[in-house]
Length: 115
Image (cartoon, rainbow, N blue to C red):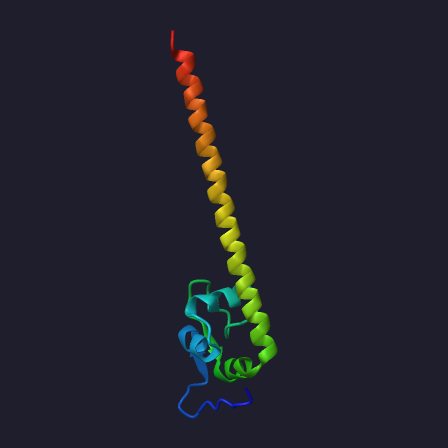
């Protein structure tokens, strides 16, 4: 567990994009946007929401070595994704309830039309 990972920064540019940051931090690319939304990562400059994001290579490598930050970021992403999952499940069950209640409304209307 005390093995030290050495990263050669000589060939790396001063800034990295989302896919490079994801590789260095060990997160999937889609979770980098979650980390930015939750304010655990800040891109360089002030890019537009749909613009290309860059990060400081030195900062990303430092965060990758910081166990506390990795733990905090992992927990935040998990909490975010579980919350999304719960809300999706809740909206699906609400949709099912609405469908079943609308089916019963149709049955009531059909029965009212019978002579």
